[in-house]
Length: 67
Image (spheres, rainbow, N blue to C red):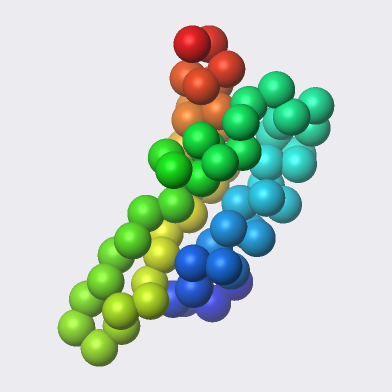
């Protein structure tokens, strides 16, 4: 994944990670995207997105699943 992923690339990366963490799809994917993908624009780089990974993503999925 590039250092400055586009929104679409970030969403694709997240879908791949979610397939491993939540294979049965028990958590709404669009809701996870809303919590796991954040915009980090800065000078010279407007299309820069951060994707939660590993433990951070597992915690997001766990919180949404437990609601």
